Every structure is written in C-alpha cells, then in structure tokens.
Image (cartoon, helix red, strand yellow):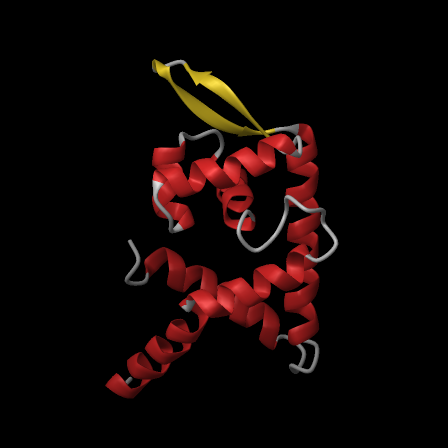
Amino acid sequence: MTNDVGHEIADALGILLRRTTRTQLHQRLTEGMGEAVDEVTYPVLSALARTGPRSAADLAPDVGVDRSGVTRRASRLEAAGLVRREADPADRRAHLLVLTDQGQSAVAELRKRLAAHIMASLSSWPPGEAEAFARQLRRFTQEGPFG
C-alpha cells in the first residue's frame, strides 16, 4: 500500500468533515421537521442521542460550538418539547440536557431519513459493495487514526 492511498482517504475525509457538507446534509434531513429542528439544532439532538444526558459544556466539543451556543440551541429544542433540563446528580448547580420522548421520536425520524439518503446514494453500487464499504468504514473508525 502506498502513501497515495493515505492521501486519497485524507482528501475524502476532508470533504466529509467540511462544515458546509454537514450543514447541507442537515438542511436536507431536517426539512419539514418543525421550526426547532434544523441544521443548527440537529447536532445537539444527534449528540444527545449518541451519548445520553450531558451538560451543555460537555456537549459543546461534539457539537462544534461553545457552551453558550449549545445552551441557545438547547433552549430552542426545549421550547419545542424535544429536550428537557434535569439537575445533574453529580453537581446540583449544573443541569443535564435530556431528550424527551418527543425528542427521541424526532431523532428516530432523522436517523431513518439519513439511512434512506445514504442508501439512495449507494443504489447504483454493484451488489455487495455497499455492505463491504460499511464493514470497512466501521473498522476504519474503530482501528484508524481517530482513537
């Protein structure tokens, strides 16, 4: 394997990780989901679904904004009934952001839309290639340079 493969993978990851790429995808996925669910609040919902209840400060690195940015987004989601704040049992002065049942339903719909979007983009691939790609991508994220 040559260094060219590493460069090719790095270039592809650069495209995937661009903020504009994510924002465009989040816009498509959240279309028609209600005023509170958009490309700005999507990362908060998604991160909470992956990690469970967390403080705004703990969530900030995953979302890519500072604590106050997470708090503003969470307030929109809270007003829509998708997120609630609970006292942090480890620190009674702090609050955890928690998905409500309605928030969990919204995340389930967003994940369904994302999976359908991915499958549509892979529909022209030869049989077995998408499955192999999924296995290899999972392996790369588990064993690759991210750990």
